[in-house]
Length: 286
Image (tube, rainbow, N blue to C red):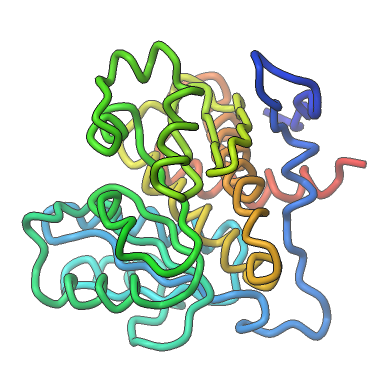
């Protein structure tokens, strides 16, 4: 894809607002001359595991390429080593963060003791948090504003509704999950549905079908974490902007996949590598 084609924005799309490239462009944080790594936002990760260390690598990679002042990764030895090999600028010690990404590539029944301690500590902080994968069931433990990122099968376990019923009416399922959880819910799919507890629903449809591949959700979680960190001040003033930020993450994810694909297969590292160019294109939209 040589250039982004901005999707229509604003009008109703099958009963909900369609959120496109022009909408997402308004939520890209461009650093100023007086910014430093802390004011730009620090996103923390407790993701991956010995069994699925790649989830940690892909999330950190996507966050770094979305634009953030610092990435802080906390985890067990193997995923930490792989994260630092791929992104040596990541920091692997505890410290301040403005947003967390938790749970990607983890089985909550098989967490090692160190990772479990990091997760508990992160959930106890009053900062915006992306709950993905193995942390989807920890909504009640999170103190800050939360984005849940399930696919249909994961959502079926959260709201006790069959996956087929969710796929038949994903908008209603996302709204129900948001209402019951008190969190923003990003229901992943070819059309992504983003619902807030107040009933707001946004739809995003920018991803190619080639994006149905392992690691796509890990990258999306990283993109979302970066956006929450770079907008931590706006979120502190108005948590309601979380819905627009989540939809922006879905737009970036889909457009980067489209650029990386070029009409054919892609890998998730290809998607991450395409993010800076996609963001640059969004910033050129009038």
